[in-house]
Length: 164
Image (cartoon, rainbow, N blue to C red; front, side, top):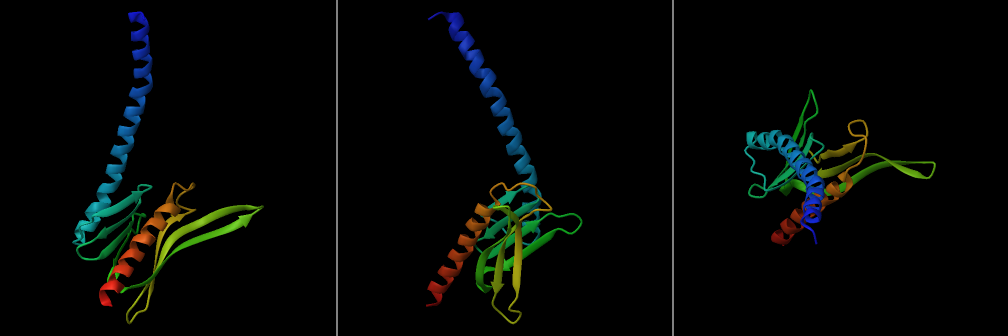
């Protein structure tokens, strides 16, 4: 094989790989920039999140395992929502998928977690993951809501096992 062919192959490969590398670094920096206000909000409440997810630059959810607390953050201007839930008071958690059928197509309007709590209030908390007015396209929010539903369900199951 000629050296010029090898050099041309390496250059062609570099022209393909280098832009992908820069795009990935830019996406990672953007995610870290979006994650910072979420982490700072959790720290203001004295929470240290182990597991957490941030999506669409304005939503975040995380778990403080030591204090058994769930922290939800929606950075909606002008009223950001910061919700702390004691997982010991959770009675039930379900994924709420609001959708409608139009001409045989399912259109999702909202996805969130609906959490019922024990106690005197016997309240229910809704944590939105996707709302059509805020975000035009789904990017895995349903799977993310299901993931956090199973995490909360797991905490409820382990709490019930300890009580027995």
